Length: 153
Image (cartoon, rainbow, N blue to C red; front, side):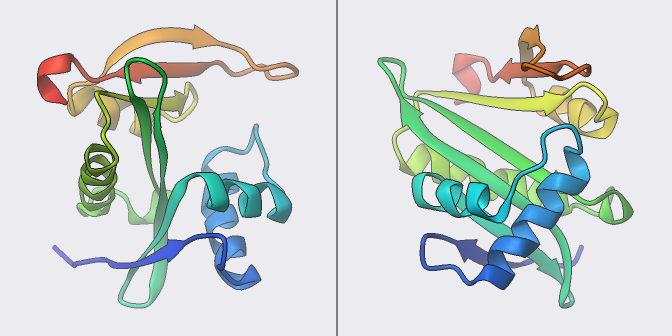
């Protein structure tokens, strides 16, 4: 398995880095396209990373820091379709999970667009359990929220 080169995307990120993160997000989630300004705002409040294999962009990740009484964090690993099934999602997910725990997460959640069968299979295969399906305003494809059982956090 190829180790990934990881680049943090924070408030000081260049437009090129923000655009790379946006490209992965918008490719995998075409029903919820983000602008460069949307990504710039997310880079300030969330922990975002880009993943490269041999210099090629393969994916990204998001960790939404813990919130609320339950200290719920959201971890999302995204891998472009042509780079799946090579262990990249596993590496991104493990990094995101570790980061969420470092930030004090008591509960770990993720969300997947229903049309992303690979993403849903990945989440379920890692022990996540579906908690809710819903449509955002204007969407026609549901989102699925999933949570790791407490013993897995």
